[in-house]
Length: 371
Image (cartoon, rainbow, N blue to C red; front, side, top):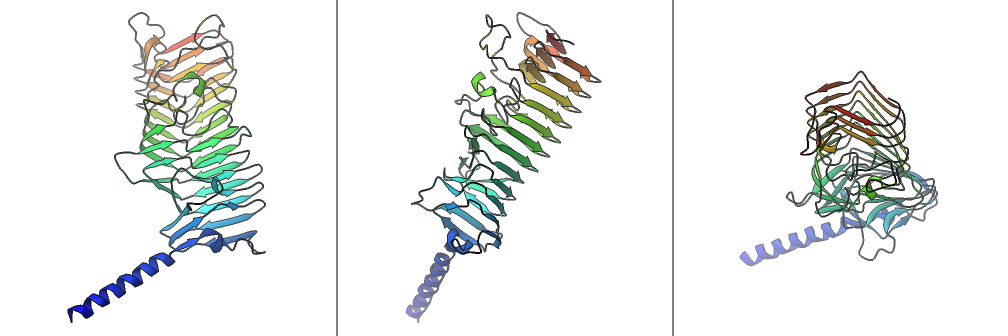
């Protein structure tokens, strides 16, 4: 009797194993790659794992919608660097899980768009997820599932080639993460445009061994729009942490957002004179801050905002409270450049500029320009 029970248990285990194996399918087979009708379709994927060796989606319009536990990853012999790639495509991925193994989910190429909504990255270190090569990436409600809660790290989440491209991030919340890789979380010097809408970033710090807070990584080209976003305890939020948005050729617009307990660390002081400072390639980017609050923020220069540019600066209807300049210039706001600077209807409360050698502009320090 005991032997028969043992046989039954083995038989059941064998069935479970077979069922688990059948839950691993190829993504190519699921979407019917090669069929004449796969060029434009919407497909619902069942629970289970789908593997892929890389799919050329050139000139394809396809929408993949997952179930509760639908996971996609590259197989071990993939030739392509990404699961999805190709020009002039429109791909929508929703409610899917992607295991981060260092392989790209997608290369968004010329005249292509990817909509990445309600998806989750899984891994011990989330890295190298997207590369934009002239296309447009839209991320909505991105989720991260770290397998080791004590090692929550991201590196090179989104990279851009020399062809540039655009990224839009909406309704996304990231908490308690170390940013690695020596560059901003979103964008680099090739990015054409970045928009963040209704996002929240909480406790995002830089890996101390990285170089993301050095001047050559702060300079960028992108036009950046930040609206209805919250930054709490974020390091170098606008200057190499989340984005590289100040002291650049592009335009920066921040509206109805807040920065609380944010810190800018080791930002090299930049001079507009070729004979002074540590960097001479000063650019002419513009920046606008409207209806934005800065509370308990600090930096070497300009505890809330550090603007070094020959461009136009507008700060309107903003509030600065308990902001500190640790190098003694501009407790709330530091401005240097020959452009037009307008500060209108702003409130400053308990902002200080402190240093062992200088203390200038408790709230605002402005050098040059039309004010």
